[in-house]
Image 1 (cartoon, one colour):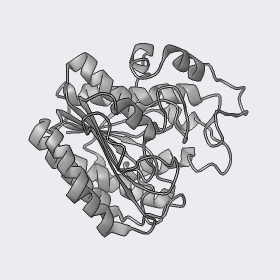
Image 2 (cartoon, rainbow, N blue to C red; image 1 turned 135 degrees about the horizontal axis):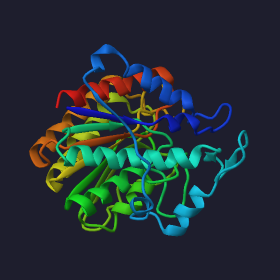
Image 3 (cartoon, rainbow, N blue to C red; image 1 turned 120 degrees about the vertical axis):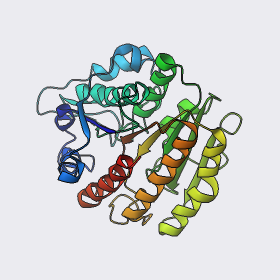
Image 4 (tube, rainbow, N blue to C red; image 1 turned 45 degrees about the horizontal axis):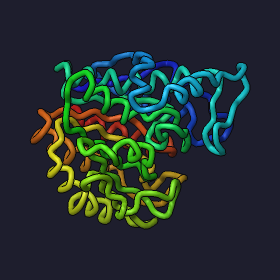
Amino acid sequence: MTLLISHPSFLEHDTGDYHPERPDRLRAVTAALADEEFESLTRLIAPAATIEQLTRVHPQEYVEAILGIRPPEGELVHVDADTVMSAGSANAARHAAGAVVAAIDGVMGGQARTAFAAVRPPGHHATPDVPGGFCLFSNAAIGALHARTVYGVQRIALVDFDVHHGQGTQAVVETDPDLFYASSHQYPLYPGTGSPRERGIDGNVANVPLAAGSGSAAFRTAWADRLLPALDTFAPELVIVSAGFDAHRRDPLAQLDVETEDFAWLTGELLAIADRHAHGRLVSVLEGGYDLGALAESVAAHVRSLMRA
């Protein structure tokens, strides 16, 4: 069984006209997953993350600052050049983190083997104390520390195939030897991090930067030859995926030229590792993807693979 977790507040996170991380992204995902082939998904409404859950990753003062940004209706606040908050953003961010927590509860509690959290704002660029890259809270990392604290999961892998390096997630992982982070990403590109030399503590970080135009073959080789073997060696008891689909050839913000089928292939490979080490437990959370058609198509392929687990 696969869970699909979302919340209406995600549409109330207004980033302004012409911003790529816009409510239409979630509408496209929701429409794709409304197809009858997905009717067996168990659909849940995301709870709001508690302050305790958020502060496992972010300092209390950071959480209070983000939740305190509530501009008047119709006005926007820029927390950096690209990251925007509206009247509904704080509530959406809290539910985005809560969606991943609920997904962890679902797979650890035996309700499902896999889960997909269809959220916005995304999270993998938010470090413990700095928002950015459209991200406010580190959703995947919050889920990982919830799994550890509540369920005693020791070895947790956070895997990221978004076209942009998830420096926020890496910042949480790199000093914790019981966490593992693996990422393929376009380089050079925002945020400018993700060198193979960034290895974390005891080699618990694995980065493979790829040049613009690399395409499907290089993407699959990066995972098959380097990232998947490293993940397999780590032997995670839980796999959390930062599922960004902006590596797609049609995405306007990058040029990695990956195909929809590559996301389905990689999802299958990650599920195989979850089967070997984690009783099949895999939680995926939406990150990037800015061409609406490519995003909808890629999410459908990803969730279709999750449902076969």
